Every structure is written in structure tokens, then in C-alpha cells.
Length: 398
Image (cartoon, rainbow, N blue to C red; front, side):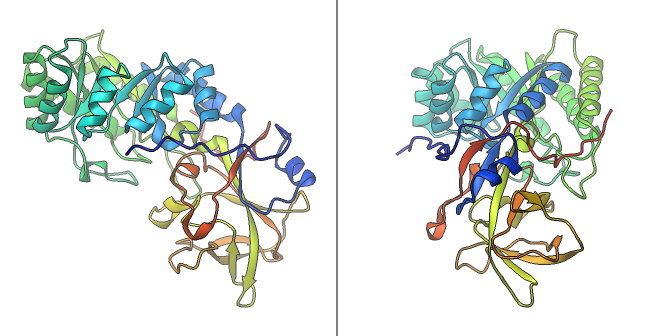
């Protein structure tokens, strides 16, 4: 049974605050809160639309909140990368005229049938012959259906290895592309270099491989989806600005493909990370002040922090003021009774930290609320709107 998407509630507070300080001057929340800054998301959407040399398709999995989707739609984003029938239904509720790309390479047949027959989808990804057969069978040879063949290369310079689960090798991708053309479908190619791809040359290598696949198949793809993977500037993470990635993609596509080849990208993290921060509360300190317990943890907003190399930035608030002073490292634990509910790395905060202070964590718009659970009965938080977000992301300029 497919359960409907349940967006986080908007907290029972005034509709919008000027900033974090104004919120804390008004209330002392006992539960975690997500602080959503639409202006930051608007700026990010405008950056992609202005600089990426093709179509921007938002990866809904990063943050499916209705307010996020509506903001993107307001900026002219009409293409969305969806991975489940639940995401499809939800996006169409927010934007009935959206162009949806069912880019999960493995799809349940009943979900695929609903997507095609009831929801109007005509774009599907695949990476093996069995999935081709499934799509072709459900769509009954419809010549308007796009079959986007996903391929992979050796993983490097990224936080996640997507190729460990998805992607055909070069020869299989060529065979699939040829089958698409023979069956009368619309052929396309896609890849994903992995989240937080720190080297833009990886996109060059993938586009060169796409050209080899097209040559082997004797098929010119209608478009190439370069996936996501564009990096966010977390602390200790180094990567060039997005403009560098976009320009290399443009130059490489122009070199290896005809002038009318379409390009698409599907940012998730890079689009929404900066538009949401999380306000958590210190609920306990022990062991001479070396261990801190918060009212949120890895079963909530910080699930990704339990298995990734990067750490989200943070700052401390007390009585609506930023707390400064000498810092020291703290071991950080969440509120549940599970021992794995802890950050993988110590975090430096002011040594004067005490119970009742608030920690604001930045760059949690991606895979924060989207992956949170209610394990042990702890609620991951509601959304609150703010006009100006705390500046956590210091992206390099081109």
C-alpha cells in the first residue's frame, strides 16, 4: 500500500519571523524546528536557471515539502525527478502541469502503470534489459515515451557511490539505447557522479562516455541528463563554484554532440540545502561538560550525519543572542535510548554551553526533514518561515 506523503506541519506560531533571533525573542520552542527561508531557495533556483546550459529538474527526494515545491514552481521550475508513485502524486497536487521524470531505475510494475496510465508520465529511466521490457510492456510501444538509459563509470571524488546500486556498463548501455530506438521510443542517457562530487572533470568523463555509448549504439540521444552531485560548501569540504561545473558541461557537450542535443540536470542537495536550518535544544550536559544531549539526533534530522564524511555547520543561541567565547569539542548525542544516536564527529561550541541553549544547524534543507523518523516517539520538527536565514554557506565565487 502506498501511503500519502505527509508534509511537516507549519508550527503554531506567527506566519513568518525576520530571522532566528526574532523567533527566539518570541518563543522558546521545546521541540526542534525547521527554519525555512524562501529567499535562499529563490536565489538558488535563479542560479541554476541562469547558468546551467539546459533544463533544471529538481530531485524531489532531497526535500518534498510542499512549501519547497511551491517556491520552486514560483521560480519557473516545472521539471521534477521523482522516484516513487507517492512523490508523483504529491508533486502533481502542488503543480498539476509539472513534467515528471520517473528516474528510479527500478520501478514496481503497478506504480509504473499508474504513472503512465493515470498520471500522464512519459519519461522513465532504466539500466537493464528487464526494466526496458517492463516499461515497453506497460507503455505498449508508445512513441512519445522517453527511455533514459542510466550508465556508470568507476566511482571517485564523491560522497556516495551511486554506481554500487544503479547504472549499466558502457556496452550494456549501448545495447539498451539501440533497443529503445528499434522499439520506436525516444532515447536519452543519464548518469549520476555521486553526491558532493568535488571534481567537475568527472562530468567531462561521463559526457565523453556518453558519446562513446551513442557511437556504439549508432543512436543520437535526444538529451543527456547529467544528474545531480553538485556540491554544497560544508565545513572542511572544498569544491569549485557551480559555474565552473556548468561551463565544463556546456563545453564538453558542445564538443562531443551536435548543437541541438538537450541537457538536463537534477539537483537535490545543491538546490535546497541552504534554505533550511534546524533549531535544536540542549536538553542535558554531562561528564564535566564534554557530552551534550540534544532534542534531535540521527533518527531525526541528522540521519545522514551517521554515515557521511561531512559535518553540517552550526552556531549557539542563548536568549536570542549568538553565544561566543572560547570553544571546546563536545560529543553530541540525540534524545533516543539507542547508543548509535550520536554524531560521528565531535563539534566545537562555546565552552560556556549549558542546558536550555539552542543550537542552529545549517544546510539541512536536503536530507534533513526528508529522512527523519519518529523513532522512540521523538518528533523531528515542524517548519517555520523566516525572512533572512543565518549565513552558513560560504560558496566560492567564480
